[in-house]
Image 1: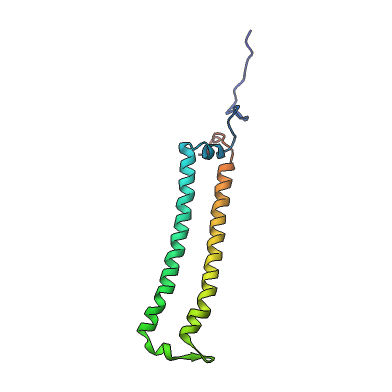
Image 2: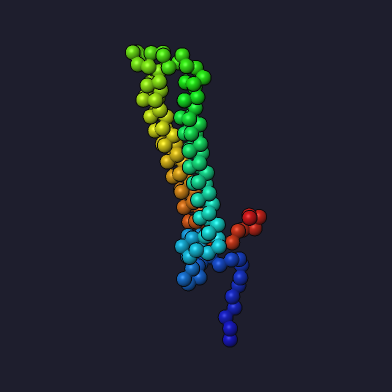
Length: 129
C-alpha cells in the first residue's frame, strides 16, 4: 500500500545536493548566477565610471579656470599662490572624500548582492512576484 502525501505548497526543505540560496547559482555558474554577477559588475562599473568622470571634470577644469581668468594665477593667499593652494591643498581632501564615498557605495552594492544571493530559493508566495 502506498503512503498518502498531502501537498500544500512548494517544499520547504532543500533537495539533496542543492543549496537553498541563490549562491549555488553563482558558484555553479548557471544562467541565473551569470545574471546576478553581470548585474553586480554593471553596478560597480557604473560607480567607477561616475568617479572617473567626476575626477576628470573637476580636476580637468582647473587649467581651464586659470586659462579663462589669467589674473587668478597672480593672486596670493597667506603668501601662497592660489594655484598652489588649489592643486596642493584643496585637491587632496576632494580626492579623499570621493574615494571614501566610492568605497562606501561599492561595499553597499556588495552587501546588497550578498543579501540577494543569500535569500531563500523558494517560489514566491501567492500575490508576490
